[in-house]
Image (cartoon, rainbow, N blue to C red):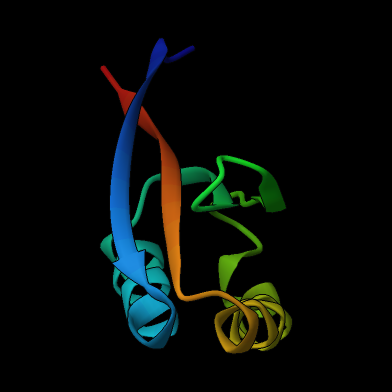
Length: 85
């Protein structure tokens, strides 16, 4: 049995850069969850991700993120990563 620990990161991006940053984060790996918030700190979408399904769900996730990107000028991406020991 492996012990896992989570860490959190926060990125502030412009709406036009949102999709690219989300792709970069997902491809970096070990992402447990993504939360996208607007400039007023209101949660727009929370996306749970697991290692086994990332490849399957990436297209619908990017479509949802693209819709959000069209509506916001600035946003914050909160990333929860799993760090296995």
